[in-house]
Image 1 (cartoon, chains in turn orange, red):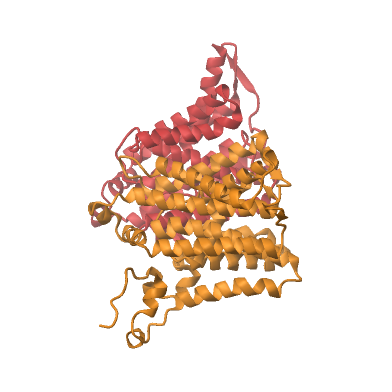
Image 2 (image 1 turned 30 degrees about the horizontal axis):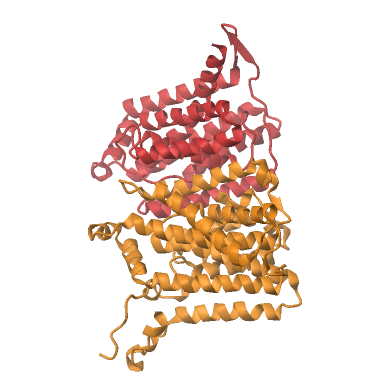
Length: 344
Length: 285
């Protein structure tokens, strides 16, 4: 949609309003396409990059909740982890790991779970406070982590390891360029779909909700239903991310379900810039690459989580628009809706 | 009979600790309208203070006495530097306090080295009453809580500071117009809430193992208590804490402990869902 509006108006009307956001998006995409070929002889970096791409999906799913519909979700890892456990169990008990079936199923699982949680937290006679929703999601993730950590069938505290490799037909994906290709395809598809979603009529309603929830409710929009819908979609994205993550690591454990990983997703997104789609991707890349580079220094590695917390605090206090806010104007971050009138 | 008495006793002891935590959380929530996500980590800091003092060879008592002071001071520092920026934006406050909690938790985790530490009860043993054994330490917790609740009540209801606090709670604008410095009261309230959390942490650490993650557990339970009880009143959170405490003490008798913990949360959330205003409804959160 943005593409057509960009091409439609005559050049004179567009002078001086160069759009930086699409340029950044293209640059990130080009980087993600080119860098793996430059690193082909460093397998551990390919693994890192694959992780980054998969975690970007998780960050993106949090952004759909917080940046686009104002749901503070401290439980995004719940959907991530459940889908991850799901594909691990299907691989173990049914000996099945065909990606054309397991990945959609993982999305379905994440989406369904999110829908149930949303129905519980968001839908009801009285609109819940945002703090109730935030705590509800945190509680869900915490309870799930405790439950899984004590449940023998899913490996209790040790989690599930040696997960059956993701396959397509006879071909099995191990860590490396081909797995990276799958992950990147998933990210690009989800990103494109999200981009369409937030610029659609539904996206317009979401923008209205962010601006003034009460007014939208008076217009007759059932605000909570829209939020629940986006929350479920975000759950699907988190589910996809979790399934890929489990396959890639060959392991899943209770910490993949809990508040810890959920918090990490929050940090990725806010650091990069919430409310834009490319922000969470940039945040994930930046933080994961930094963490990899700094891990060699002992003093920093031990207190890396503390640094992450400080980053979150500083971003929240002084730079709520994140890294992207430094480069992109508010007008462009918020964006415009509907087709522009051509040639006035 | 013996079983019932023991059970009731455990429940009351657990509830007492929850009451201490929730009182701090509730006071901050109803006064400033922000929900302190770092509260669990303040509890953790209290527990850690006791651990430090017992590591230093001083025994647990100095730590127990120091915990409320230390954590209160930390709370004061946090309020003056960070938290006060968030009063106008309660949603952002959620993220900000969460970040503070994360920082404290990870620092403690780094200092503990990821291990579980256990700390002996300062007064061990049990006394028997009518042929039933009661733990002395748990009785001490109950007694302390009663004293703190009584003191807080008197402070709020009888002192001039309490009058100002109640005024600021009722109508902050009018309170400011009357020359009451709400900013100073907010700092005081936050310090007080933090000190209560520190005391609670110090009291419970002999009962639980000390690890960096105990904070989040108590945060979730305290939140449910406040939600159950209703924000803005004194009795509400106490009642809610009793309900959560009762559930948490009772469920492990009925279902396996693995299920009990998540089930407590589910039941409490469900009750909140049905009755969002809490048991006692006056608040503004």
